[in-house]
Each structure stands twice: as C-alpha cells, then as structure tokens.
Image (cartoon, rainbow, N blue to C red; front, side, top):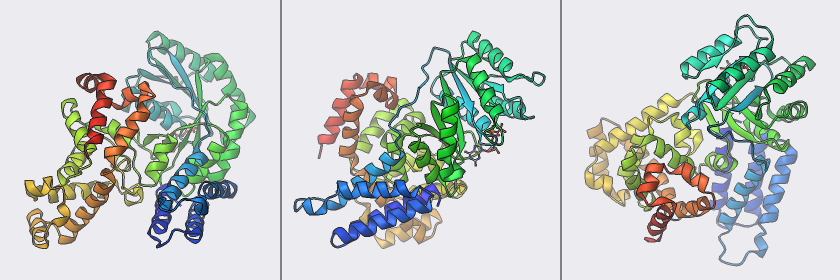
Length: 479
Ligand SMILES: Nc1nc2c(ncn2[C@@H]2O[C@H](COP(=O)(O)OP(=O)(O)OP(=O)(O)O)[C@@H](O)[C@H]2O)c(=O)[nH]1
C-alpha cells in the first residue's frame, strides 16, 4: 500500500470510530484492527504493529475515563503518538553548520539513488544559504561522473571529478581539498555503489572515509525494499559509521511504511526522503510533521515556512494574522493557493494544509491536481467580494452556485466540490486560533526553530521573538 493510501486508511479508521454512536471497547477494537490491516498491507513488520496497537490500548483505558471525557480525541491522540513512536529512533543526526567546511559522505548500494540524492541534498542546503559542492568519488560505474556533472550543472552547484583517475580515494581527497580552499561549507562526496554488500565496497568506503574524515556519513537506501531495510541499514551501520539515512523512492511504492519503520528500528535517524526522480522531490523527514501530514492533519510549521518562501515579506504579517484569526474565508483559500502554487511540488505543499488528504493528490497526477486548483481559482474569480469575504459561505444559495458555475464556465458540481474542499479546510483552520499560539509556545523553547519559521525582516518588524509571541497570543485570545 502506498504511503498516501496508508495515511488515508488510518484516517478513515479513525473517522469511522469517531462517527460511531458510542465509543466503546468494540469501536476501539474495530478501529485498531483496521489500522493493523493498513500497516501490515504497507509491509510494516507485524511485531511493530502489535506493539503499536497494544500501546494505544494501554494509553486509552476507556473504562477509567471520567464521564464527559472526549474519548474520540484521546484515541486519536494515542494513535498519533504511537505512530510517531514507531517511526522515531529517538536520536538526532549531525546537522551541518554554515561557515565551516562540513564534509558529508554518501554511501549505499548500487542504484539506490545516491548520486541523485547527493544533488537533492546539496540543492536543499543551497536554498538554506549554504555553499555546497559535489565530489564524484564513484569510479566504479562508468557514467557516474557524467550523471553527477549533469545534475550539478542543472542545480548550479560546483562539482569535481575525473574521467581518467581510477582511485576513488585520490579523487575524494583532491575534491575535498579544492572545495575547502574555495570556502564551500558543505562538501558532499558521492561514493561507488555495488550490487550487494561486497567486502570491496566496505573497504573502499572505509578508505574514502579515513582520507576525507567526513563529519557525517549518510546511507542512501532504496525504500521500495520494505522490511529488508532493517538488515541493510543494520549491516551498513556496523561497517561504516553511518550517522543518518535517506530513504529514496518513497513515491508510490507499496512498501514505504515498511522501510521507514524498519530503519527506525535500527535506531538510525532518517533525515530526508526521496519522493521522485526530480531534484525537488525531496522532503525533510521529521517524524511528527510527517505523521501529521500522513493523517491529513497538516504541518503548520512546514506551511509557515512555505509561506515565508512564497510571499513577499511585507504581505506576510497580514496573511499570517488572517490565518490565525480562525475565520477562514474563501478569499484566504484563494490567496493561499495563489501564493503557494509556484513554490514547489504541489502535492508536498497541499499535504501541509490541515484537512488535506494526500491520497487525493496521487504522485504522478500533479498536473491534474494543479489544474484542479487553477479551476478552483477560476470559480472563485466569479464570486462577489461579499462571497469571498463571507464568514459563512455555506449559506450560498443554489441560484448563486448556478450563476457562479455559468460565470466561470464550469459545471455546478465543480463549484459544489470546491465549496466542499473549502469547508473541510475551514473547519480545521478554525483551530488555528489556538494551534498557532500553542505551536509558538513550544517554538519559544527553541529560539533556533523560531528563527527558521519567521524571516528576520518580519521578526524585526514585530519587535523580535517576544513581539511575535505577544502578537500571536493577542490573536489567540480574540474569541
Ligand atoms: N522514483 C524515484 N526514483 C529515484 C529516486 N531517487 C533516485 N531515483 C532513480 O533511481 C535511479 C538510480 O539513481 P542513481 O542516483 O543513479 O543511483 P546511485 O545509487 O547513484 O547508483 P550507483 O552510482 O550505480 O551506485 C535513477 O534512475 C534515479 O532517477 C526517488 O526518490 N524516486
């Protein structure tokens, strides 16, 4: 089962339980059985699934709950927490810091996606202000240097390699030296892959590592191998000092859930996932936001980050304020799409919106999905200002819907579908009023994270961290 379907199945099981007339032991058992089936179909190891469902049972003692307690919510929270536990190795990975020459070495079996991932990783950090560079120490596969060169050129990242030299250690050392001199603060070394874990691969890895002294060794693993990921991650961990894992090919393969949970079981932190062949098909892997998005609960900090990237700085305070007011109008729905459409893979962005189910945006159908969003925007173009700003567009009359459909050249069903999607999102966004201030409370404990979320210029305008927190609190208390 693909990851998006897994999320959909779990969300549906939770929704069914939430709709049950009484939330009793039977409803909980049915819900957990459904979740078990979904996880097993996604190739998550049965032992891990049983441990997860038992933990939910332990956390939710229905009989002991006082009358009036929201049992549905407690069950949902327990499922969320246990899914996070299952995927969380509980160990952070080394994170490169700007301004010093971090050396990161990539290892993995042949065809796992190492070379592609090196460039994705470089490009991601380039976007965060690093000066990355790429060294091709893969002298085993003819064509590896050409591939890296092509990717690097596309991403405008300096690279180093050789068609003549056959000693990977020599190339790695020369490349790292050269980019140190050029003040690159993220020197990425791509190494050779082999068909299987041969002693020669391990020895070569060891020599390159000894010569270049990497700050971090990243093991790149093909995510389509499911539970076999456990043995592979374990074997690499034992033979090289692997500090982090990137799981690739989690786009539409049946065994994504299996690979992720298996790697987590080896206590190796997964830091990114690859979700396609293109450079932008690359996502930070952070357990809580990942599970949150998987279950259609959105990812607020991811969304705020995207808004930061997409929107002119002077418009951000007003937009964020509107978003936190808890009144999600159609105009806001429109503005959100308008600002986010051009920032990256549409599926990635939409999955950050609370209420959005990623299975509605299957991988490979982005074009259709993008067209759908543009269609929604055309429909909204035919609405009046009063309709766009209404706090209760549910009251829109049938004749207005027909008129809007005619005005936008769309079918009535398109208009009602759009209004349905809007309502779903509005319902969840009504919780922003408390969710964003809560989020900020937790962010306050980590100033670095806060700085990541809000751009510096905006922070200044708002009077620094404290000014921002005060603003959010004020917004939150306006009920
Ligand atoms: N669908 C999908 N394909 C990917 C992903 N990452 C890499 N690929 C593809 O996987 C194939 C192998 O990728 P490479 O980057 O050449 O793999 P490699 O590990 O460097 O291979 P060797 O150099 O032979 O060890 C290529 O066709 C990539 O386009 C991903 O996340 N999703």
